[in-house]
Length: 202
Image 1: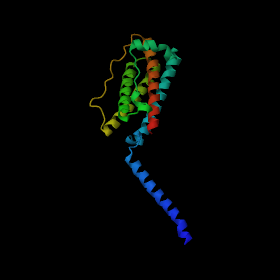
Image 2: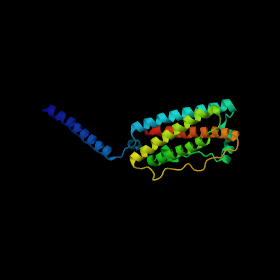
Image 3: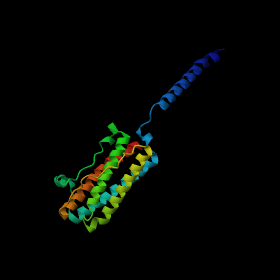
Image 4: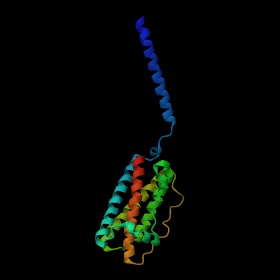
């Protein structure tokens, strides 16, 4: 008779655990998942790969401009960049503190469109960097298309594609080469932020 009595608290404990697990499962199902749940893993992995490739292209452009024209320090060219109208695309909607996935995708796409225009404006900088610029422009365009297609799949694409805005006008070979250094540097910073948020979402 003592044995069933001893088993009774154990059965009660097991029943309580079962009820608790069931309640927890219900809460988990009712709680919205994090932002990553709205983006397919295959899309995020493709984006990460595209960012890595563009950053590698950008590093090659920076190295060639440095080796060929001794333009190695973008921080020394910031004032010239302001006068030329070379801007840096923001990614404020992609910060992990205030992450809004849809707004982040919009801002990421707009930034890529801006850099497409800036890279296009650099065409003719010099034969030494022509092929690198072409490849960089193509890869940035592909990345922008990928983001746009994902926004369309989610039904959140803007009604009209963003415009590139006014592009810098270069009046000398030096300005164009210095512009190349600044654009490459700004693009690297932009992609570094993009990579962090994509890793967070993945």
